[in-house]
Image: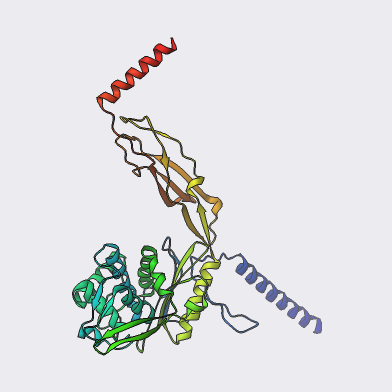
Length: 418
């Protein structure tokens, strides 16, 4: 009886050992890619969960150069964005500056409507003027609703007209789960028609930091001040950044916080390290500190799972190309920009291939800087980027006299050879 029971328990024990061994093997062999959502795994020693156990209602991490999603949780869920709405407001401001519709030195007059915004503000008074530069500081650093509204009126003529521009820009960026009702995100509900998603916030954040990197000159300021110039005289007003990661996270470049009682705590955090640019978005975190700690965890995860591949333009050897109908028979090609690509997950730089191709027919006239070909990069057979090959010189179209002189030179040379 004893031997029978012993053998029974021995068999059961063997089955348990085999099951545990198989489970461990499967866990070790399963590939972990930063392009897939990572599940939270409790730490058996500390009781803490992994950094990617995001407790905020929605979150997303993207790599900015390509826009690839590295992590997502409810990325398309429509939520109240609060003041991260101002990312779109800032994008339109910098677009207007780039298009030379406005300048940083322009003065902006504050309307009574803008001055009465309430919430997060810098207490601008009706009739007060501030430069565009200082208005951007107020929006980026202090998340000022009054400054955002004043700038909306300055660019759009009215906030309503500016909001139409915001929604149009959102559509251009492919923000399918976003609709704006105002320029600042103050006191809204999804039912009112003001909402966005974590992924859409990442899209507009990426557009802002990649198209207008100068935003970081504002969004990374910890403390500053503006001067109120009113009928009461001049007074200084201090600005303190609402994004606490500015002081604590290595490589941080911005970007914007947001919070209301309905939206809870939101953050779009952007950072750059070793040529890798990331955007982490946290929406509806239950506490202020959680949005910062979980955004930092997402950024850490991205930097740990990404590497930067770079090839300098000077390292690419290009040969002179034939030119038809020009005053010169050959043109010198050049490449102006370096190539950069962010590798994620199991991607390897060893599998990146480069192919140089030129236009089938390169004919004069050619202007310096005119495209005459491409350098195409591929990874595992899929194109990942390209660089234009440009003409390094201007070559005029040959005239009848040029052809005549060419014939004369050839005749003379042939006569000399004899």
